[in-house]
Length: 297
Ligand code: GUN
Image (cartoon, rainbow, N blue to C red):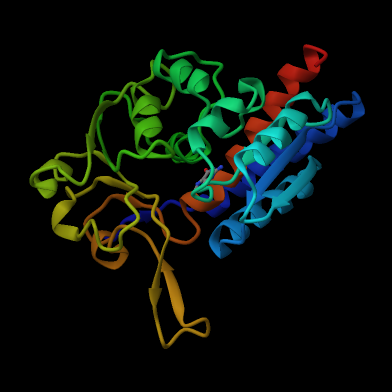
């Protein structure tokens, strides 16, 4: 029997409806969450992602403030902007879209964002709080979205073997930390595989939950998946498709058609993890606003 499809699109819609109600109730109390999105340069994919994020914020009733800096912007330009956003009381969340142009040191930028406004969860203080199991940390949106998807689909990682393929700071590493947490959606036994892992298939075939975030199509084929396993595909890759009106199609890191024949559950691409990332960004922004608003900052 082919795998059950876990629709991130549907789960994200439910979460966004819940957030709409929460934001409307907060507005009645005079607290309007504010999200600043910052794009440096004109990378088309980054522009598309940031556009989706700021539109989603506005749709939720979140005050959305967007700044685009030119590709030639200096590190000081960006640090100056972050300094202003840090002290702007109408802004509760700051998102600087990555990657940044070469002349800007990403680690300096992430360090400059007020950890209380770090809705991406990339500041070292928040990374440390996640690693030490702080339940109140603002956690990175994509891995948080994966946990939320599992929980809302009735798939409890507790006691299961979760294999994360990919070790990026944005997805792989925080994904492993969230799965390890002593918390609902956590308590898994976690392995992290990466480009140097010997015999990837031997490891992935032991996964009850397989999470793939490497950015390469067909990284996971059906022979690498244990029958009945849950496969969460974080990849979004453009592949040429002359038959498609745009000339390309978007696929994940797993061979969807093959893997769905053996998996128990699988996320599609598009319509899987992507919409969850945006829903979690909105959720983190509301959470940050609640904390900062109540603290009177
Ligand atoms: N670039 C790719 N993914 C992300 C993300 O989740 N947040 C930011 N800020 N940049 C990204």
